[in-house]
Image (cartoon, rainbow, N blue to C red; front, top):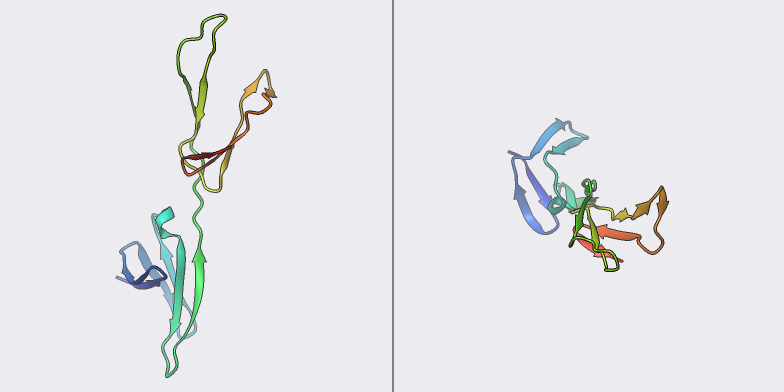
Length: 119
């Protein structure tokens, strides 16, 4: 098991970390099954009489899921219809647009960031 230093926790023991290369000049690790909670600062530390370190910041992207469309209620002529287009998560923010007959419906562009809508 490899111990990695992370900014929010002094030492993180996690079986998802694997040391893939270790030489006097290079230490390479991999992290499997990456999630958004893994984002943050990772420290590479040199242990000598005086301690030196460098920080790498890991950012994790989340591909958007296929959107689903929900009709709130059956549309009745002369009434109002409400349609919801939902893509549960994405990072960076996904852009959702309503289209009709191959054209974007004006004013319907919405950004979705990890399940929270930013209009």
